[in-house]
Image (cartoon, rainbow, N blue to C red):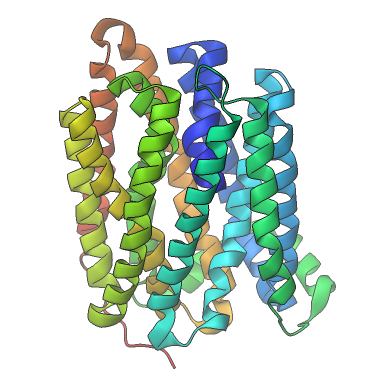
Length: 390
């Protein structure tokens, strides 16, 4: 709900409306990148803290609460403070994902992790559809987002998070003191996480590949609604309806990719997902008319449905179980570090070229995303096909 409704839809359009097309998109991407940079620097420490404490849910609850509170306030302040609150909310959301992802190994057997990961993502997309339909009710007469849009998503996100936080049971572990001890040495923990990745066959290669291909993936997700409105010509209300239709594709693809990962292996499935992304981005850059956008969006929606589903399975197979939270922290670091670069580069390309090239500036920006994606595919191709852990 947060990733779709706030990052991909409401915040970019809110910023463009307040600051203008070029500056608005640029400062929105700066807020995305700044929040990702901070999260990238802290991810290994945050993951290791949960490993030492022996529990994930207290950390998941804390960052979810921070995200919900900051999101609810965005529409009630000026755009400068709103972008800061958005940065806080996005930081908290990305931090919460570290613990959400790491919980997978505790609630599923190795042979069924792909199916469960796909099922979780598919239910997430079902929630997006509910949120998107309700979001339509908060738009103004011109079909634009309002302050109620941010409040609605905050309430829905917080409300749907409560059952998992209440129902999931974990051993108490070593508690707060061990977690606090980890927080005192973040750079030592980062160095240890890198050493651990180097000592595990294939893990460092996966981390490097993810750094490259996560750049275009995260950027495309963040700017999709702005692209639909500014480059293709949809209204905000129409763009929301179109993106919701694409979510249905992502939901169905999540289940399919998860089952495929269990059937043929996580690494081959990851390569297929990245190939789908490349096709979608190429179509998006080549045509700016509504119908080709829908085709490209459907292809990208299938890619979105597979990326996180399959990545989680790859990492749970490669990483030692006793260091899984730490490795998910490192996994989060590289994805978020790459997300620092992509959105700003995209925003800078559009801001600098939109006057001379018009809508062509968006095509150039999307083509730039293909370079790191292809490089990541090449590196991921040589990942080992690990045996299932027991």
